[in-house]
Image (cartoon, rainbow, N blue to C red; front, side):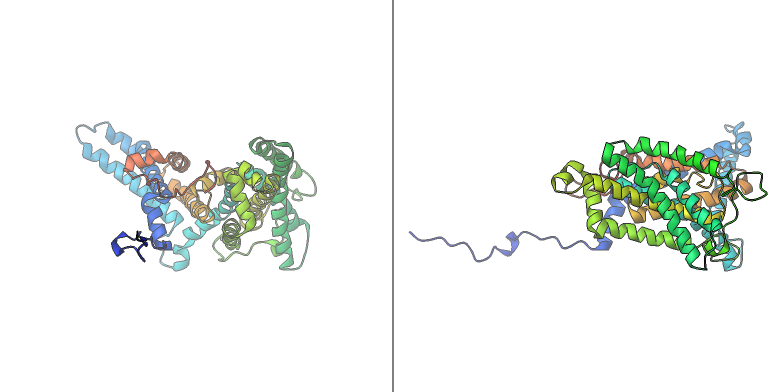
Length: 417
């Protein structure tokens, strides 16, 4: 009997093929062609297409020519094309670049306005997205923005500190204000199990009525003013504007740094790993020794601080004084931004820039073409609708579904990426 020895090595053709490590570019292209990125882009395209139909349908010239559509259909189609092209052209020149201007500064002024509108949306969107990643639905960004604006505004016009220090204290005060308002939610969630949606809704109302009351007091109301408005923020506490003829301020740089910080927190830190683990499965995270209650408190503190930063940008950068409408609905739009950005930091930045462009270009579009600005709100709503229904978008554009072996990028359990 002879021993049978295994071959020293398998034949070349029988060796299992080890896949090479995927590069960043390869991963990006895979996501772009078959993942959530493509679905997001197609959702925006589909929303703009439906918006074009609404623009054409609401145009008076199109309506007049439609009365004899069957005898001369070309007239109706020509009027529809003219209405849509003029509206979207005005939207582009009002948000990206004005091609009618010959100086670089004036031509890029719309882009600066887009960045100005996008900055608070991104900051608040990061707060909402961070909570999403931990499995929490933070719809209290509106109240957190208001509290951040209250504290930052009071430091801005109620204190007189040296240059540099005044701005730093004002920014920190706003972040702390938002963090406190968000921390209340996290504490109640951790200690009593109170649902964050109910608590944040109620705190939004509390913040709204709180600022309305404060603006009637002598400490906050502008002397000699009959309407509820605060004094103008001290010049030392104002976020520096980059251009004399633009509202773009230092807050945009701060929000990009904040996005990088959130990315590092989620992808490179132990705390971020705990956030994602709790968001994926709190029971499993608890079994693994993680404190779910402590995670809820920390994530809402940070989420509130980010939303408070949006309030800082409003009162120290864009408006430079407090009013009852200082939040401008940014807290609710931030939910849309976070959803569109798939709850990822850089996706939220991109979504914030898109919504900032729609906000910046909507007013020039209405002024120059007469297109109702409500069309912009409809387009935003449609984007969210299609983002929430990826099978519908894939069916319309015949986008292939991922194979079972590929990881799915996007939302886990409806919230985290």
